Image (cartoon, rainbow, N blue to C red; front, side):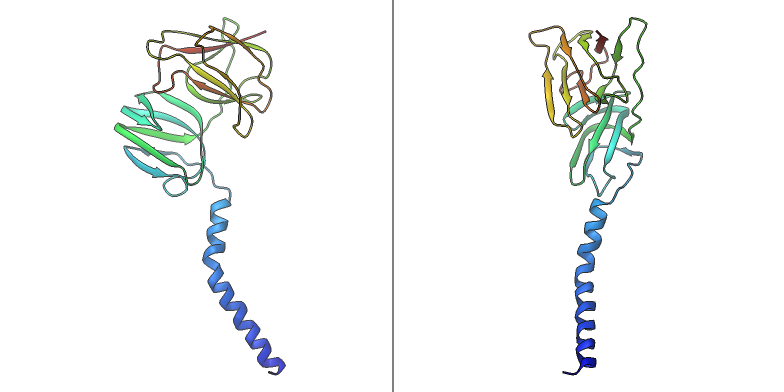
Amino acid sequence: MNKFKFTIFIFIVVICSFIIAYPYITDFINRYKEVEPKEMTLKSGEYIVGEDMNQGIYDIEVINGKIKFMQKELSAKDKILGVELTNGEHIGLEGKGKVRLSPANFETIKMSKAGQYEIHHSGFYKIGLQLPEGEYILSYAGKTEKEKPFVQILSSNREVLNTYDFEDKKNYKIVPKKGDILEINKCLFFESDSIVINLKPL
């Protein structure tokens, strides 16, 4: 085989290899490229992150009706903030109603006149961005007829660092650090309008 034929042979092999590999390369790029979360409205059904919606961190709000979102019962105007949805995750909605997903706002929690930070919605709050790091007394106010609040401190990659369930205590001393995430569940399986989570600085 002379040089010309050998060059043509190599060229054909490279072209064929590229044609075969192209779908896999584009799939890999699309799976891991940065995509922005987009606002959308969902009703009852099954959804897959990465196909039906972009991955990202969302604020969830019920527009109307009653619906179960990721096994949590929600009613109109209920919110769950800072929810991270990742590619391949299956999202199930049951019931009659509509849910709005919008890119997370990460709104700063302002200190109340009572000298404490009051959290009115379940969700995930970033320390150093929405709440200052430091020492706090964690407590809650309001009726808990069925369940007590459940609070966790997570690392920046959402690994559990500490858990507080209020089963045996009414308050806890906590020390969240910058970069940590405060996970608030006013109730585990439903959202209660009457419960407020309080963080009083020490």
